[in-house]
Length: 240
Image 1 (cartoon, one colour):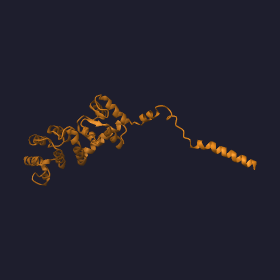
Image 2: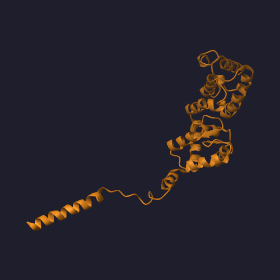
Image 3: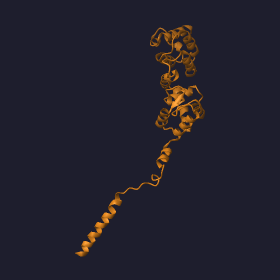
Image 4: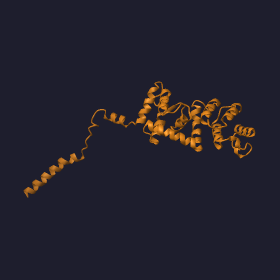
């Protein structure tokens, strides 16, 4: 009996000794060092986020979370895209840029994460794919074209000036045969700024057929257009 009581006491002591140690948690060596959280935070930043910071730093007068000026020029140079070219507008569309001549941090981060872009090399490859997509699909082109109205117009302007629209049309419709005729017509018949609706209708006009002169100036094809475009189609059909 004495031996049994002695064993029970011994087991009780072992349970009391081992109990706390079974629930105790130990901090990792890294977390016990001062500044460890900061180092881990920096390590979590991706290459594309660091690239954004680098572009921001090139334009000292720029806001901290915007790439513009020299920073934007450097980005375009590194991905082999000429400013205000067709490819330029494709890139700005895919990045979701809404403010002229700049890219915000949120636009950049959301795009690279959503599209799985981890490096500038990958971005450069994607640009080639995006341009091919837009040039090969009228639907993709129109999505881009309509999106760009706000970007090209500028956030301080209510409507796009005809001069601004002309410059953009020169780039976006450079391969369309009737571009010159349309611009001559617009310069003498569009007496106001280019509204969002007119901008959209011009895109539809050029996309509906390679040669707008094939459209019936008095039929259904031009009936959906505002008068300035319908008259242009009718005039060019007659001239042909």
